[in-house]
Image (cartoon, rainbow over all chains, first blue to last red; front, side):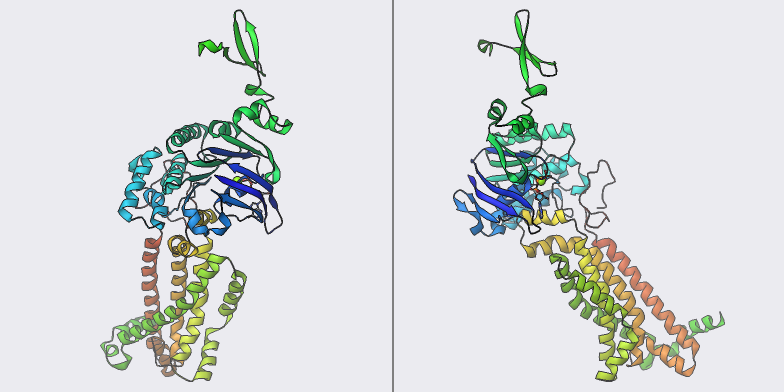
Length: 274
Length: 237
Ligand SMILES: Nc1ncnc2c1ncn2[C@@H]1O[C@H](COP(=O)(O)OP(=O)(O)OP(=O)(O)O)[C@@H](O)[C@H]1O
Ligand SMILES: [Mg+2]
């Protein structure tokens, strides 16, 4: 369990990126932070591995204040997947994935064998193991980034817009892959995005942020859609328009569901037909 | 042309290959002197440059000081130090070390600075200590620019080491100064040609080294982040 307790962050230049943020992120669940650009998502995420230290308040992991832990050791135990993959350009795919296990003292042979197995896990061809990041496509680089994040088998996985830089088709593929992985691996995932569709697909708990890391609403996708706290949330999740604002029309003997643009979304079946 | 031919004759004259003024001996002195100077300068400039490059602090000071050092006329400094410590090899070592520091310092810190900040941030975020970041990320990725700095320092030192003969019995510069005194222009020109050949040879060696120290995977583009390339030419392996 990760807990933020009244956390604020003011950067040295005076920017107040996060103001009095409190939240519990349950273990083995995916929490998605979603909000517009500059709302403090990355700042919040990086407070979990002490890449950013709060100005006030505290962050706890399983009841332990992480300010008391040495940052290097803490980071080696937390997976972190970055938007731009963050791979080391002078290391091969395999060496990139094995980086953290080697830092933690895993014997070289073992680390490389584990890294190869990890390529399978994230759906990468083993033939790519000896390539350099610059020889990979964007989607492949992101997979390597995920493999590196998972390589130490961390309990916590931080993902900062990991699929932001790839095209929509690859993106959908990677999202499905992550859903599958999460079923298998059961990590505590903290995922940052500004795509509400992605948030609904991946999140057990979704946090909608306004500027300054202020929480607009926290809840499951269903709660956010059914009971948006205010107009801001309603328009953010799209509950008031398009293919999320559905109504029923009667056609002959069937009830059909139509969205607010008048497009057909499907047929309404009685509970007994499930 | 006549003078040039006699300079070549001078270089090939077997009489110039014996005794304390033999050409191979002078070349050896010149090389050892330059090498020692470069080692001194590197010992000062590389750690300092890495510190500046890694922390991002002190860059302004380094630029100003380097500029100041570059502006000092080497012959003037040489004379000044020689007046202070006396005739001998100390003065040329000091003067030439001062000459070699700025390019090496610049090579060291620009090598670090040219690395994509996101690469370094990522290395830190996965749990590398500051020392590991320097050793495993900044050092290999900054090496090509450092070698570039060493290369221009070497050229400057090899060329300027002729001045060492002004205050010490040392190096290829002897031929220039003694030729000047005795109006033996063949000897002067011959000596100059040897310095030029030496510089060209070292230049060639450095060109080779520079090709080999570009980290694989970076394919000649220094410190750039991995580009999202599809079907580009595979990096040299
Ligand atoms: N190192 C820093 N120094 C000063 N201000 C910063 C720093 N990092 C972030 N900020 C500011 O803090 C605010 C929140 O930034 P943050 O990167 O957390 O936003 P974000 O929600 O991740 O945005 P995006 O979706 O664009 O990635 C922004 O106003 C940003 O300019
Ligand atoms: Mg961000």
